[in-house]
Amino acid sequence: MSDDHDTTAYLVGFLKNFTLLIERELLSIRESVVTTVEAVMQGIEDISNTVERNKLDAENILEFTYLHPDKETEGLVDDVQRVADDLIASAFEQFGDGQEKEKASSGKSEVAMQNELSQLNTKRDESIGRLTKLDDSVSTSVFSIVGALSSEDLIAQRLEHAILSLKSLQTGLSFILIDYEERCRSEEIERVVKSILTYTFKQYTAEEEKERFRAIFGKIAV
Image (cartoon, rainbow, N blue to C red; front, side):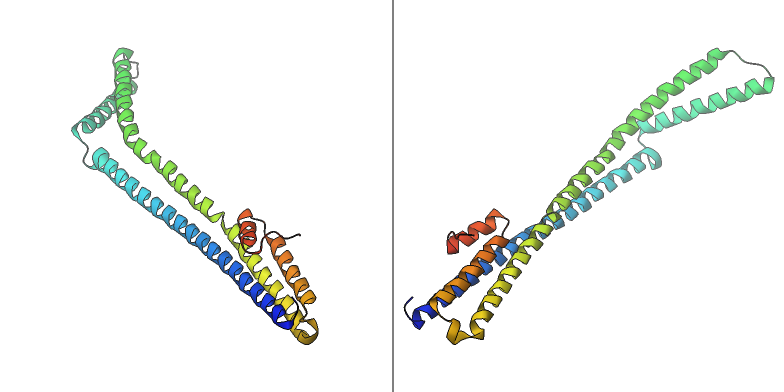
């Protein structure tokens, strides 16, 4: 750079490239924010859909098991109730007579009740099995939301890098403009530009940021 024109052109070229760097960085940050928001909203929607599906399952179980059970369930419930009534009646008879009855009939009732309860529990477990999927489904959706939100710190860090880079640029330009006639020399401009670029590159921690920087300014010694 042999004259003021070359010095000015060099500075303008640097400002153009630096602006391009910040613009690309902000666009990348914007994409990350959009992706994060979409992932969170999808997770919330998945939870809502899962809860709604399982709510219908719960209502169906209530409907078919208790309010309007099918014939098989109704028969099992009636059988269990009948066996329970027989056991209670047998117990009252034993205490009322003041002596123990033969245990054959009560033993038979206990076995019958166990069988009926086993069948009823099996049917109940089949219905409840659909509801137990709620925890797994919701947990998966929650984990996806947490995973998406984990990028929040990275986004904040990258925003901080962009802000610090702009502050470095502001400081460098202020230094030049305070005494433009004296400091607008090729050596001084090159020193300030190198200082800004070095500081900016040192802020970057992600390889993506460093690659974006190198694509515009190339490699620099830090």
